[in-house]
Image (cartoon, rainbow, N blue to C red; front, side, top):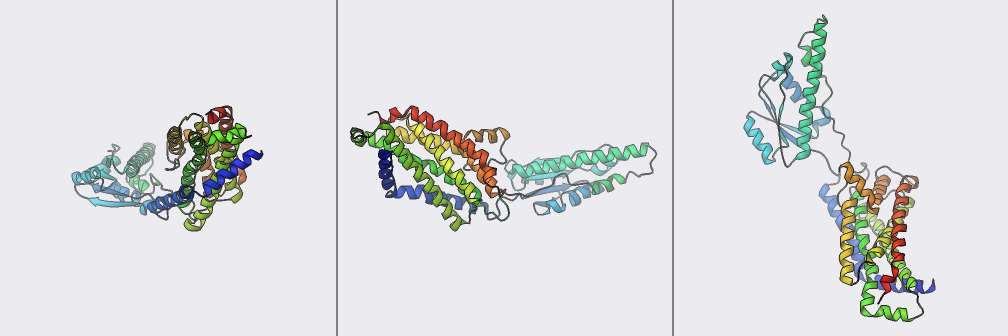
Length: 390
């Protein structure tokens, strides 16, 4: 253990004198998290869409759709209705992306619905504003489906001898629930700043580079001949590797801790329960150390080590959701993110910041990340001889 501590101490002193570690470990993730937060605004993502509406019908049901459905209180802050008289002009706006969609109420729409022969609403989608276009389609389809349901109910009542007049269809449609209800939920609670979503992702991404900087020094020392002098001393190869891994781990934990404190002070980031957040940090750094050590056993030169680590780091970041939240991603992609320690760690931080969880909440993530660490460190240990071969 003595030689390993000496090696770890020597590496830590070298890393602390290297300004690159401070830039990559603290400054870079802070700047990127702050810039992304500014790009999305203080309130995070808010849905907004403008619909060009062409009312060629002018009937009672058309007014219900425009005033009661598109103008519903739940949609009023998010949806802007732009009345237009020309169907072709509205369609051009949608195709150019000036509006999310053009909704056309065809002539005779109300009369056809009241007569039991409903005519579908026409929606011209924007290729650039897909979310807004999807909402427009859902509104049109939902309203048409509910009109059909009410019309069937009225027809059934009339067939049974009820004195209910056909105009009841329009009255019932006016009191229908909206086809789409928007529940604006950001990636964080109202009291949690947007940076709380992005700071953990950026921190974990750059943590791999910090850990890799120390680990790659072994390859550099092997090339420079320093490694041969160390092995000539009474230092076992495994002690040398353990010392370097310990130094890389300490730098990773220290960097993430410093970044957490700095982001809290400078960006107002909320990391949740300190004990739970600390458990996630120390575990994910351990997993990064294991992954780095395993990757380095495959490299013969410093250039190979840098290339391999860059590919692995970027791949884990993309798959784990470090850059873009996977909350709205397909189910398959969300599941695939959990084959990475990044994905588990980011899920844990969301549970801490958004849901206000604690140690018990993030325990499954800590165990999963710990499993990554044990497997990769174990595999790296079995291949450790390759790292000290001269």
